Image 1: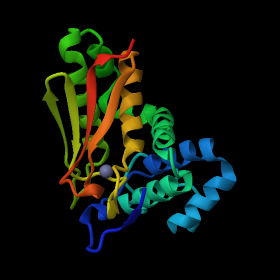
Image 2: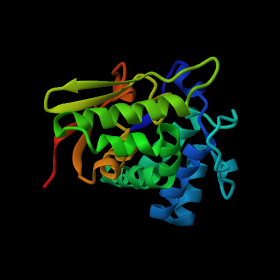
Image 3: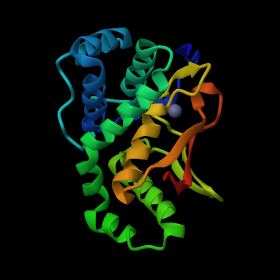
Length: 222
Ligand SMILES: [Zn+2]
């Protein structure tokens, strides 16, 4: 995968993120690549200041961390992993969801998640993904900027659409590069419904699309 910087400023890089989100991505990455690998990745990303200095576990937006950091981390991770790295990035995304799961539940309320399980199977996955979108909207509510996420029913699949995708912000890539977020969505679905659903990124901003789009199969894997 060949990843470079966009030639023009991408305003999505300016969107601030909760320290806890960057922290969970860092902890999940470290779990897979080890402490030394992590230092190499952070240096490569130009994020030397984060070596042994991860953001605090705070869910409010302090203004210290942005999608620029998030996409630099993701780009450096993918080049560190090289060929076959996309499936590892997805695994890291799944771990990152687990690390940050309690914040997600706080944002939407555990009762809402529990209520989902009572819905008919035909609509509950859609409602579950919509709830995840709502959680992101709530966690990223901030003055001046806002994230644009949408959920679409596409027959046998559900599309999660991010016009403001944080992990490819400011980047150009010859391949889709947001597997980490796919892993996050996938683990969210597993943790809510207890079943694996196939998910893949079908469009990527870094690849010239207006938004990053992940499609989740409505049919659970056996
Ligand atoms: Zn993206």
